[in-house]
Amino acid sequence: MGLTFKALSGLGPKQPATFLVEAEGRRIIFDLGEEKATGRRADLSSVGKIDAVVISHGHFDHIGALDGLEALGHPALYASGSVLARIDRPANAHELPAHGATEIAGLRAKTGRDGHAIGGVWTFLDVAGGFIYMGDHTDESNVFAFDPPPQAATIVLDASYGDANEPRSAQIGDVLELTAKGRVLIPVPPDGRGIEMALIADEAGRKIAVDENVRRYLRRIAGPDSEFAAPGVAERAGHLAENAGDAGDPGAKADVFLAADADGDSGVSGEIIDRHMRDLSVVFTGHLPKTTRAYKMVKDGEAAFRRYNVHPTLPQNVRLARAVNATTVVPAFADPGHLSVFETAFATARVDLSGAFTTG
Image 1 (cartoon, rainbow, N blue to C red):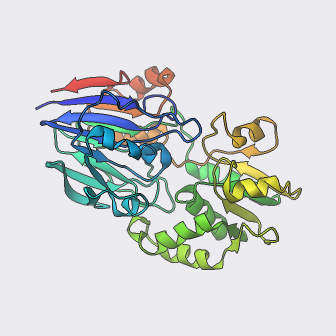
Image 2: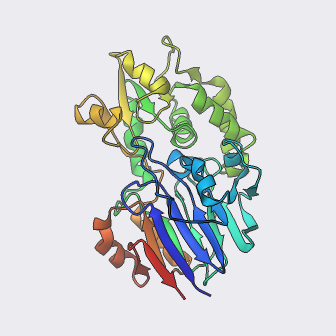
Image 3: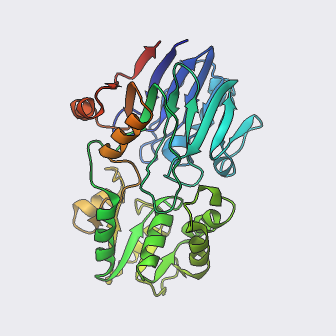
């Protein structure tokens, strides 16, 4: 039997993720996201009844529209236990394993750790020669484990970095060099890049201060969510959680301050920026939406930007697509202007950015 795929949202630069798959009489949505800066989300008004919603991880652009479950007929919700613990868990929620065989809406499935964030998993459905939804992912993380997915005819990849090919190893050196020139604030999402930056800076001998959000997730990766950690990470994270300074303390003595939110618009990072501390520079390392303080600060020369990979480069994605022997590749979250580059890079697989197709 074949498979029908439709991107309700997610084909375009950093669009919130919402993808519909129909196979063997089941209708399954992967992720229900919202763009935090604008409130943009998929239009679910004509989607109809859904059998299941599968959540890849707990970032807002993947879970921000979970209040739309009612409009979809109250489908069963599938996510890792870590993600389910962070949301208003419905009665018909099902816990996905961090790595292993499972069942989704009666279909055989597998999940594996995605290397991107606490609780993050890719999902494989045993339909139409195999379908893989990666969500956000990377195999470069110094903190999060990555499980190679099985072979599948169709794979939806995280292509948010487009044709970028710079490895994370080069970026780490640049970020550490910036922290060596004086005290630095790095606004971060606490459950992903926040943990990674904390451990990197600590290993380099920098004195660290974190906000309570980052500290909470350091404790989680050290304890209840340690199954998502790479070898040796849990113990180091636990030690840092108990010994790092308090980024929210105006008198904190630290070389590197790590605090949410990642855009500097709110939270402790926003409070620190508001203090206008002359001896503290600001470095942003993630996506800069144009409506955010981060974008304005970088544009006006008030802050530095240095990308730090938490998504895959094009060479990583090509290796992954070839490893699973995909014949159809969907580069999600990417600029459509990269289509010709993708077609060359992923050959001989078919690259589809049409937003809707049927296989088999």
